[in-house]
Each structure stands twice: as structure tokens, then as C-alpha cells.
Length: 329
Image (tube, rainbow, N blue to C red):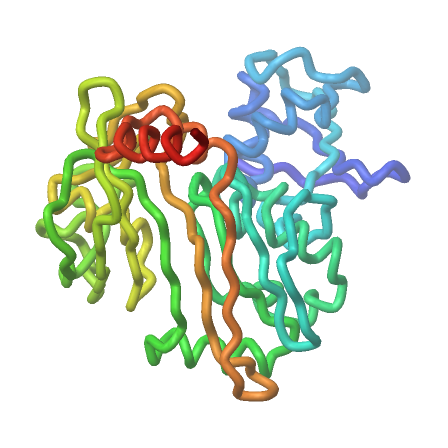
């Protein structure tokens, strides 16, 4: 049952009279009167003080309203409508030209707004620091890193540069190398070529076994060194991407029986001091869209990964220490 809404008042509030037969809980009544908004969104407005009942701020979503009560609703923009707004967000710029920006993303920063993260993302920070990106699709973002993965990514500053970089990604000519700290000791270098799609049992996971809507995915990996973190075997592994699927390295390494340290979603363990998945995009290479010349960048490991590396007893480390001591003498 719908009510005839009174004209909006001068404060921009939407005025609604509760009609006969529509009494009850405030959130349920509002959901009937303005069905274009979800009940969850209406509950949020009530809890935030944006709804009044007979001139007074509503006490709770469960407040009872009766026929003839007057409701005043200060409608709020949906989070997704605010997603593409400029916000001051901290991130490091490694290099830039008139065509591109290379960002060194810290762990914990979401790249692109989405459900649960409509603000405070890299995209919002890019729009704040580079206002001209408002005229480029997705603020120039052409590839992403997971929230808890650190390291390098490139952002286009023009539509032409974005098109050129996307084509390079599609042609698999962009060089992206990661450093991962993984469980176990992979004995040799290799390639994982297994399609990745949504896990049919756990929606937040990706999978290589019976995935939903799988897409081709190729990861090359090479163990660099191995050691012990406490009593657990761990290894430093270089991973090079040909494709860029969601969680690709994390899924592919887990499929080998070598999940990343800290990656509890895919079977890794949270071992001090690893507080997130130990994955860092350390090298990036692409052809400059303007000149056609190759450009390359490197990023040092962040402090948290350095702390984990320092806590690992790497094989051969004791011998190296002895050699160093002899040299000093």
C-alpha cells in the first residue's frame, strides 16, 4: 500500500503520511511507502538519524508508527553513487608521464570501489591527486591488486593510453613479477596453466576445481630460496603472470600445495609476523603508449614482508654468516 507523498519541505526532506492499514514497525512501513529503496538502506537511514516521526528523530528501526503519523525522510545518496568521488588517500607514486602513472600500492588499500568498500580506495585517491582522471573510464585503472597484496600497478592518464595498456594486457606483453612467501619447498620452477573461476561452494573464493565461469589463467613460478619459519618449511617464490585473474597467484600456488603464508582463504597459516598474504608485485614492465619504448620499474619489499623474511632461517644462512665473520677478521 502506497501513500501520496506530500511535497518535499524546504529542508529537502521527503514528507509521507502513514495511510490507513499501514501501521507497524517504522522500517517496514517505510519499505511499503518508498519501495524504490531497499529495506536495509532505509534501516541505515533510520539508524543514522535521517528519518523523523512527527517532527522527532526516529528512535529505532523498530519504532511503531500509526495511521496519520507524519514521516520525514532525508534521502541519502546510495554508496555506489558516491564511489567515484575524490578523497585524500595515501599511496606512493613511483613514476609518471603525461600518459601513465605507476603506483606502489600499500597492503590494505582497495584498488576499486565495490560492495563493502565504496570509499577510501585507490581510485578515490587517484581522483583527488589527479582530477583529470575523472574523464577516463575507471579513473584510468587497467589492472588491479588484491586489497592485501602490495606493489606496483600502472594507471592510464588518457583514454588513448588506457586503450593501449589494455591491449598490451590482452596480448600478454605486460611484464608482472611478484615475490611470494609460500608454505613448503617447491623443488623446481614450473608453470601452472589452470582456468580460474568462482568457487561453487564458497562465493568469496576462486577455484581451479569445478569453477563457475572459468577463464584461462597462466602463472610461471620459480623457487628462489627455502628455509624454516619455526618448524614449518617456507620458500620465497618468484611468480610471473601471463594472465590476470582474480586471486590468480594465490589460487595457483595453493593448487600446487604451496599456499601463501598468511593467506587463510586458500589454506595458508597466519604465522607471526605474517599478518596478511605474503605477496608483493615487485616488478612491472610495459611499452610506453606514447613512445612505444619499454619502461620498467621495481618496488622494494614492504616492511612487513621484510620482517617475515628476517624471521625465516634460510638454508645456507649460517654458512653465509660464518663467511662474513671470517672476512671481517
